[in-house]
Image (cartoon, rainbow, N blue to C red; front, top):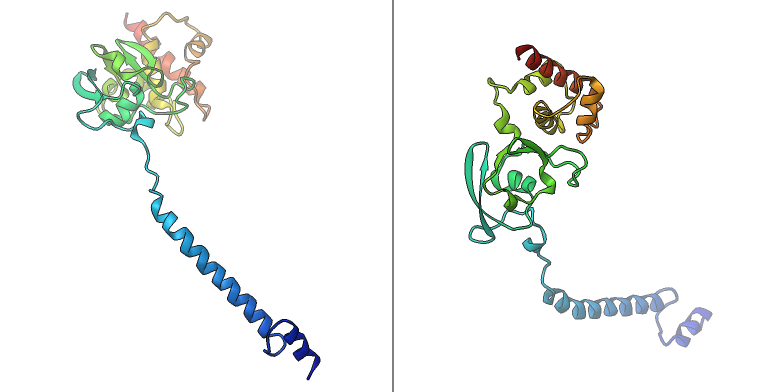
Amino acid sequence: MSNDTNKNKGLGTDAPSGFGSSSRRAFLSRLGSVGLLATTAPLARAVPAATPDPASNPSTPTPPGTGLPVTLRINGTEHKLQLDPRTTLLDCLRENIGLTGTKKGCDHGQCGACTVHINGRRVNSCLSFAVMHEGDEITTIEGLGQPGNLHPMQAAFVACDGYQCGYCTSGQIMSAAALIKEPCGPHDSDVKESMSGNICRCGAYSNIVAAIQSVRQKKLSAS
């Protein structure tokens, strides 16, 4: 009997060398895999699939018949809504009303992309709860002007090329339109200070200031 056969007998198998022992290991490995699958499959079926909790995300539109009833007057139109009390005015405008001209930038009141007018004053809508504004007059970029009937500030931004990517433009225009009615010095530096809450990541600041100053100059000439 050859040395290989003796070795195989020592392992408890009569199969030829290089075949019996590896086949036995493969068989045991497959047997273990089958046992593992048999025990874990029922557990996998027993664990329910994770589903998002709508209550954890106040920006999700509240289902009809739930939430607090509130009536908001937006761009001259009244909207009767049922809102989660945690819903910000920004999320309400975008998700519930469908007015997406007001942009969500930082969502922390630091960039100004979400600027709207509340009773004529500029407000960061991401920092204000919607239910707080029942009875207020809310104006968004859609209500400021329309194609063919632009607000003077919108027309000035177009004429002065006061935008690049355009994401911050609605907030810039809303803030600038409110600035016209606020105390502000005559110089460019005064305008820059008053507009410091609105960030343009493209860096179109010089054209934005030029647009604002052109409207201020026309208003001064007309008075």
